Amino acid sequence: MNIHQDIFCKLKLTSVAASLCSALGVDKPNQANEPLEALVKLCEGKGVDRVLMYNPEAIALWIFEKYADLFTPVMLNTDITLPLESVMPSVTPVCFGTMYTGAYPEIHGIQAYVKPVIKTDSVFDALIRAGKKPCIVSTDNDSMSKIYLEREMDYFIVETPDEANEKAIELIKEDKYDFIAVYNGNYDGTMHRYGPESEESIDALKHNVKAFEALANAVKENWKNHKTLIGFAPDHGCHEIDGGCGSHGLYMPEDMNIVHFYGII
Image (cartoon, rainbow, N blue to C red; front, side):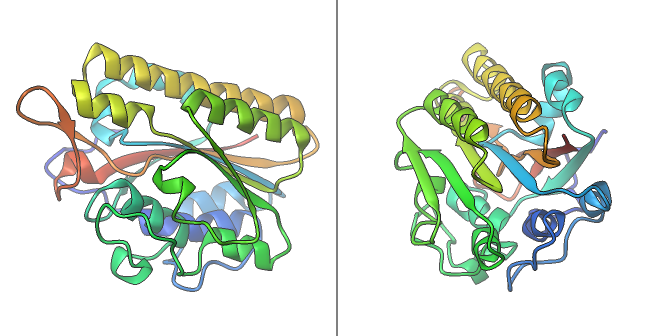
């Protein structure tokens, strides 16, 4: 799927939250935009009762288009590929705030790189109201470990992305949670230091793909009695700046255009 980099994607990150709730038969968060039609159709009639969201950071649509072969394990474990426009400013807490509330930043309240607890209704709140058990697996001091605190749910905060992925696999094996969100920030951290296309960053991207594949395999092995919606869902994109480093946060296609992958296992 080719999206010219002089335009912005038509589908919106604000539609993800409602889509996830729709998959599980739960009312959407009260400020969420309408769901993604393709994702609703994917889940329709499938009896989805589990969701696993893998959230790598800063993987842009242009990265996917240029290095599509690296994403083969992701595509083999998913059914649809959705180009999406993120939100401004295109930085982590703002974008994950929108992804899981379905609301624009001016509504959920995070409009800069700060990490307050979001009070706006979220996917996690909607699931809890419906009697379901969500949890978040994240690394310490990152946005996903902070902005959705203070809910009646479990948080597993660890030191490294590898530990987060190991914990997520452990939770899949335990089969206690209806919804697991797993955050990995390793590509973003590497990209800022070395640039989006550096050898180090491409290695980090490969690591994210392998992590997603391992999570998908864990679902196949341990959730055989469930129908699971699995997602590979970054928050924003990135671009190279002077000095060969990477950045994001601007209203430009490289930062705003992202791609999500979803499938039923």
